[in-house]
Image: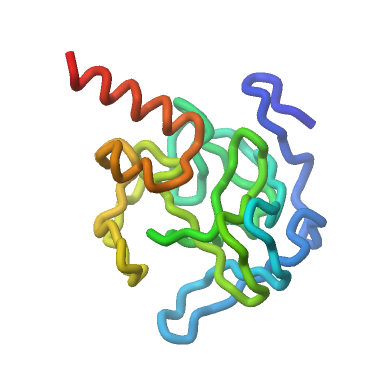
Length: 174
């Protein structure tokens, strides 16, 4: 089913045994107590970890949405994808052109799935201090709007974020 207003695939309903979530599980990190999304299957670089749909379209961000365009923030189906945590050295990417969670590198079964939030988010609803621990940790994560183009160029980002960076940088040169 397509959401005709914006050509986003729309979910037809909630299902706890959602076939889109095969190979995914939520685990609690014993050190932090935080929930995260893990794969139970090996996934090759470029492969699809999970397709996703737009469960609901909102006009502003929340901590559970992925930005698909200006004023287009989607709640994900399958809902298990909401447990994909941020990481400055991500292994997955929410590809909103192809409506799939894409592996950025080979991922082994049992690994936590992490994506770089500014890859989809222009301005985040709830900025936070990152504690991912990667060598290239970006510190405060608030969206792509305040990241220099040279930083963003090191990440796979959505078509929307690329366009917003180009518009921002063009305005800055005027």
